[in-house]
Amino acid sequence: MRIAMLEVSHWHASMYLDAVRDMPECALVAVSDKRGELARLRAQEYGCRAYTSSEELLDEEEPDFVFIFGEHAEMVGLISMAVDRGIPFCVEKPAGLCASELKPLAERVRSEGLFNAVCYVYRMTPLAELLLRWREEGKTGRFTNCRFKYVTGPPSRYVDWRCEWMLDPERSGGGTTINLSVHYVDLLRYLTGEEVVEAAGQFSDQVFKEKIEDHSVLLLRTSGGTIGQVETGYTGAGCPEDRDHFELMTEEREMVFEGREGRLRWWDRDGRRGEEVLPRVEPRAEFVRRTLKA
Image (cartoon, rainbow, N blue to C red; front, top):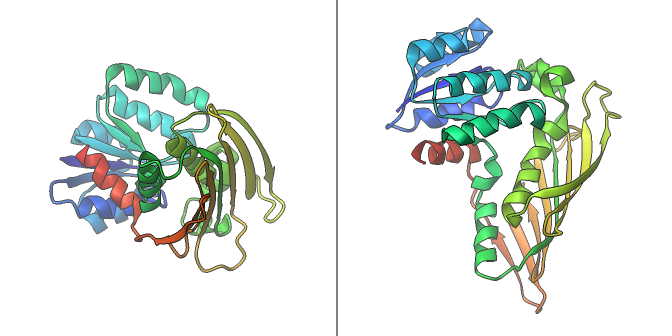
């Protein structure tokens, strides 16, 4: 399978590039980035051709599959290029600035039956797989309340990664909510099998006072009545690792997950308790492998 990647200066692109390189059945044929120097550096590192124009890449290379990155404000245009050419694709989240600009494109892709994916990698984690298995085995019952918290480093890291556009809401769509919280909104949908029907939130820029929010809290309710709480921030002040902390309540079981340790503790309502230590995986690499084998 001939693979191409568009706008590879995105900070996650190297994870996808590494994953494709490790798949002998796939060949990375080309990468693009409007900043030609960065495209050439990526191409040199991964042994493929470089383009400054994504459109030219698609026309010249005619890849079998394309991964789409880039600034959030440009993602809809990049997706359209792939759809117009009938090329199956995967796009990094959030795929655009808002739902209204994506909806017509999503409907077109669905009507044409074109394979597509969005990289919500928490679906690929050992935690998500375990929770779904427990639910299917009747060990948890329905999820009733899910609290997800993730706090990471400052917004200045995006400048260090040469993705300074992340600090401009017109190009990124916002801060921690559109970048981080979307993972947990999707995880809530995935674990419950239900859509979010009500949402409210509070946003803060009090730590770094950028044009984007650096901390936010969302309160959600699914169609089945599950309450979801999502808190994310760029406000970590010194912890050496990113921090996932989940508190999950179900009809039959209470669970607490600590991402740093990969540890899930649980308590049943009949008095039993236990602990699971989950294996560490690189979820984006697993996502790439499963997507290309789908």
